[in-house]
Length: 146
Length: 250
Image 1: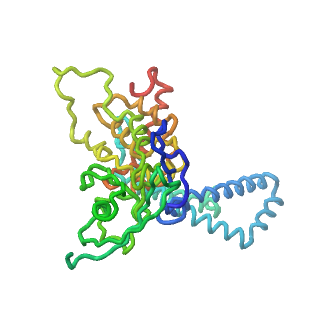
Image 2: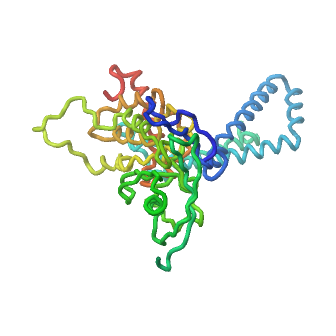
């Protein structure tokens, strides 16, 4: 154990009579062992931030007329933009799979009188929803709907 | 010594509050037997080599939760870990995220405070008279919380949790799992009070679902499930408090 945790992690509200050594973080935190998946999961937040910013920019340009919008599309035809979107896609799939894996067990056994469905059913519903939304969005973007 | 004996080196974290400024490492090379657990090796060191080594243990059967330590960087119950699973050098240290009292002994007072903060007992609005007989519970009702009642308080989950390391106020996995266990108990009427604790300082919403607590839990309690179920219940209870005249469950 080499890195310090928060100095007051798990410390009692009143200090004891014995001098204690400060708490240490687990060895593997944050980039080794099982913590890697958790850290990468949280780091994908940066991707969402950038994607959100790009989406806002796109909407802003969309409202500024066809010429501006065509200019945006033209600027997006470069290898960096495609690379970013590939990374974002990989990140999204990773987050989706990890989140869907955890989601069923986060459901309480019942809410009032209503019981939660079995975990496989929840999992199947989540993936079905994901695939459904993806197909729908693909159709919208391909001009098949609206 | 039998033929099955081999030697292993134990790198043990030592800290003497009267002498050491900070924890240090000390190595012991000892003969081990093939059926030993990590705890057996620590007891051998204490009994045969260095009587000043301090570590906690009691039942030797993964029930009391006393002997939790970092073994090769992972929080483990040392009485449950077969030495044969480890290499020639084994690192043993005190549980991460806890202040160290001495050597492998951590200060558990902070944990005990968090545990009591969630009121881990059955709360009844009105005490039941003895004449009324026992409060009956169906197997299905028991099944709803049984898993979360298996916690032995070994604190491995606190040691693995990255949120505990960074947010000292966080109530933490075992305490929330225990509180949630009583919230799910059909005999209990104190869910609203516990949900207030869950929403207050050290809130359940600090949990970022790393799932590490469940990964290291030696009794398969799945505290991450409890914490995240408690989040939803705390929100529902809060919403009920907005629309119902007397708040949530009480």
